[in-house]
Length: 273
Image 1: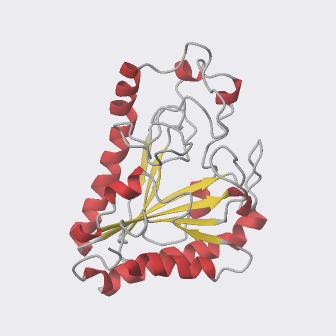
Image 2: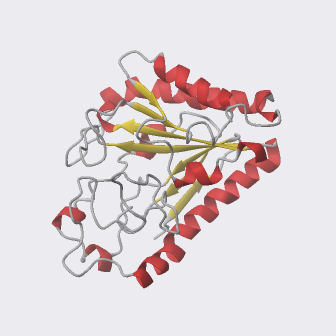
Image 3: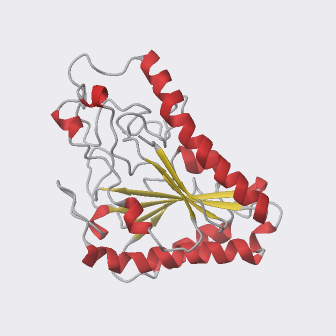
């Protein structure tokens, strides 16, 4: 089983997809309870949704499910959102706060360390390699981290999540031109609502790699799944909905590509800070 796929392109834009995978080793799957075995908290169809939207974009996919290990969490286990409900590096609950393991089958500390080396580290090694390759060619790289989540999850947030949740850790992970361009496109999208640095400010990948002063910019897009799929099992992809959303996503990626190639991001310092 290949746990990572890299579709290498020649654009300065790299798409990270850490949560679209559904692979769970058989021995681990058997330890999950019926709630866990549903794999509900997948970023369903995320690769299909973005496929072909930017010619030349590099795509790094992680095929291992987040219940095995969450590739978008700090490997040291530090919470991204202190004081708020969230899930951990090796989750013990789902997004509803429900237990996902059979009694006594939760991963031990030693097992978490082993999973980190076996799964988490290789994904980030691959992602880092692509960002460094792109930066070596263009002098900069833009990581666009692709995510999606159900629209209503009271354990994590109140009310209905906007379709577009843009995260830059309050402007720290990219230059202002990137944040502003993406936000402008989303706000202008008829029928879709937007929030910038709301509940989702960017996960570990965005915060870790987004160091604009070094030439690596990062931005996270968390999409409400109602915009392109059914939000209940069997989690069907809705082409009729997706084809309304995809042009906006394509516009975002093409704008980022143009910004990167224009030289506008080569200025010194981060205007967001």
